[in-house]
Image (cartoon, rainbow, N blue to C red; front, side):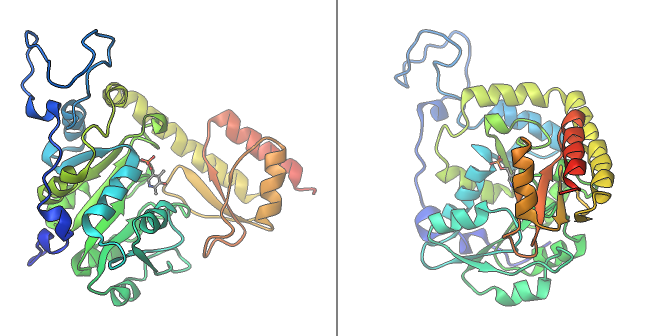
Length: 351
Ligand SMILES: *Cc1c(COP(=O)(O)O)cnc(C)c1O
């Protein structure tokens, strides 16, 4: 247990005493069928979405609580993880004063959100084995370093960070650690969710966009201490997760067999794809991946990228990212899609 940690020392002053917007739906939560709602200026004619959605998304949270074995008080939902991450910036980072630390190569949104919020970005590159340089990170931090972003499994590398290094950072970094677990359901590594209570400075983000197959509905999940969740709740837009999203999420979360089956298929396709990529003569390396994509190093990433686009296959060229020279990121698709990719790559071997 981390001692001497007080979340109030990290929250921005203007946020600490904020009076959140109280919506009509916030004031009345005990709903019975004989009640008449004339409080929110809604259109009274039923069409399935004429009412404002539950601002606290209680049914979705209860379902997640059941699946992940964590209290609903430790959950906040957002319009994608991107909204959750933005809330973290607005809660903890004073514009033009505070800074965050990121570990490139990593997910691009951390830096974009920092720039939008006028927050300085300190970058500490990963090792060539794509692991965090723990000592360098701790040395780079100062009293204005409010948030450290750890993405594990990481995008675009697909690698997971060592448990020992993550734990060291959780214990020694003085600010908030956001652990982005967008790809955790594809990973052999365990989620840090069951250790949340040990680390009052830990925010874990997950998403329905990847393993859960619902990128289109935009639902991001944040798990943290009650204290942190309360702060984020006080600044989130009241109706940030719409009714259709809540309904679809609930439906899908109740179908865990189907989700598990899809994850299994994606994982076995990934193993196949990796083997096949490794024997393509211009593929120098296919990195080990704990996610649903593979990072490969080729002879000339930009040339190969364009050749694939010309054959109607779109992947991601990551050659401009640090440590990713001539690297391409390939999402694992359905069997027939992966086969098409491989047959096109085989054809390209002669060019
Ligand atoms: C895809 C991805 C997300 C998901 O973001 P959403 O806004 O929830 O779709 C988050 N973090 C990382 C590292 C990702 O690659």
